Amino acid sequence: MTSKRPTRLDYCQYLLVSQINYTITNYADHTRNEMSHDAINRYLRDDRLTSRLVWENVRTQIAPSSHGYVVFDDTVLDKNFSHKIEMVRLQYSGNAHGLIKGIGLVNCVYVNPETGQYWVIDYRIYDPERDGKTKLDHVQDMLNQIVDHKLLPFHAVLMDTWYATIDLMLFIDSLQKTYCCPLKDNRQVDDSGGQAPYQRVDSLAWNDHDLAHGKILKIKGFPKTTKVKLFRVAVSTHRTDWVVTNDLTQDSLHATQEVCGMRWIIAQFHREIKQITGIEQNQCLKERIQRNHIACAMLVWIRLTDLARKTQQTVYRIKHRLLDGDLCQQLNNPTVTMRFA
Image (cartoon, rainbow, N blue to C red; front, side):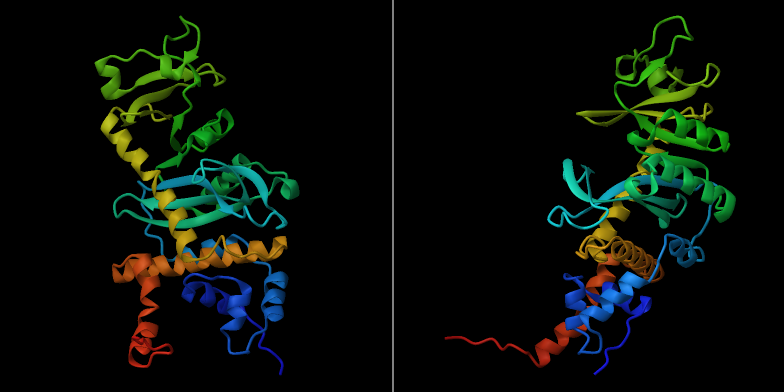
């Protein structure tokens, strides 16, 4: 009997409903012989899904805001036990707090601060051996897409310390957009107007006015006339962030803390997409299959979050409720019956 040829919709539906096992073998085993493992593998090998699909599927869901934020950060899809998968490379994982073998994703999330809602609008796979691009190149490409093609209104770009480079910050400045990001403790800055040598940002002196309203300074390597506003943000008793912005009118530590809080939304996105879509769990070796699987996982997250907003539920609740029918069926007509000795 000839097996059915799977489609993008079929594969996304599988990722949406599956709860634990997201492998091709598991998919084939649950199609009642309608699709073979080889047919599913051929589909994933031959299709060519790109990040453009994310925008095509999410654009009508977005509630734009002139006060919106564009947030960039990367995550690693853990492939530590699958070293022969193409695109897998050794890289730092924040979750693992160390180096692991995995596939790097640079993601872009749009946040509406008035509603607290957020949407993934773009992503890039970090694969420098094939495209020669750094993570910073990917961020710049995505920013250009937002400004030139997506035409989404936004107030500021939020990003992590790793992205707070001279080139990227000046590029955002050239777009006439605001950025807000923390600096590394050893970043060289000058708050003396050129009267004293550069010093580490964590060695600056702060008075009460500076703590409440920030201080204007120059970062080493920036053009002579380019100044920024720095805030000392106490994250906890053991951690201080040195948050910098090119918005020199920003005058409030409290407002800066609120903006920084928006940056953690992308961490929530990373947690959700890993827990509810199986984005890490495809073990096929070929690059194209991995790329298509990642694209389908993104589309599944978009669908689940849209349902969550419309029904005022969490994505986890919607995902887990898919098991309710099976549980009812097993209670009424159990496949395995309980028995006492």
